[in-house]
Length: 369
Image: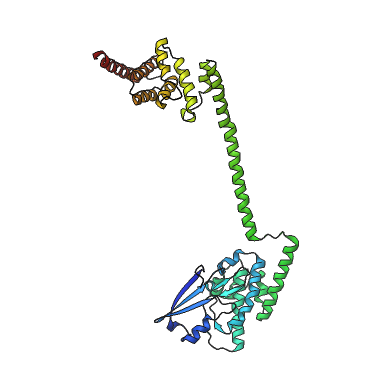
């Protein structure tokens, strides 16, 4: 068998089979229309069957199909009678499969116990009717019909034409006429779509819709987020070039530092530093350390100072190991706290004491030197 084939294995005791020699096993393996390809291996007291299910669908899936295709399957099932008289065929739900053309195939089979022709006909007609009722009806499954008998559907008017048939040929004819009628109605009244193409089309449409939504989101993000941000950077750069540092700061006030490139951080840090109340000499020393080549912490420090993010500024100063910048951030926070009338009084005083002690500690270190 093909290594890519879908194989169903079934192991049985030899004693449970009628077939009991190599010739009869060969007969069960014979390629026959209506029987799934089969390979049989003897394993001591057991027999292992391997059935090729490639391209096959279990009978349980048939009720999901349209009525026309279910009827087509039943039309094709009529041909099973030809092998019904040659093999013992258990017509359980799990033992019946069908291909893409709705041609039925039987999985397991055994050697036939000889019966009279009229008995064979009666048993097949009964099995055929049970299968039709189980597949075409909506109230009961095929398994329920087999277990309970045809009388379970006696009051189902839609299946009356099946139950009224007296012979297999009559039933085949009725099913064929009903299939032709539904096919004609579908051809005249409905637009028929190939199921696989329809499903593929739905997936393609869903994919296109997803791409469209993503493109729309991207365009919206570019239009309402990226573009305004880029325009703000351009305006800030122009303001910086004409030494309008306040306007430069205002243009970039809504941007986070992680959204800025190095040049933008540079002009913002420089603008904040220039707006500080520093002596000329102090400002010159500060500006010497601010350039597009500066350490990220150096630029981040002055941006944090300008935005009153003193905790972040203190962290940057510590990262730079610069006590002057650290003292300056403490002093800026002290000034900020003194003017903050909304802060809890005790909390405010405790923080001011901490800052004062920190400033004294750092200053004393330099006085001792």
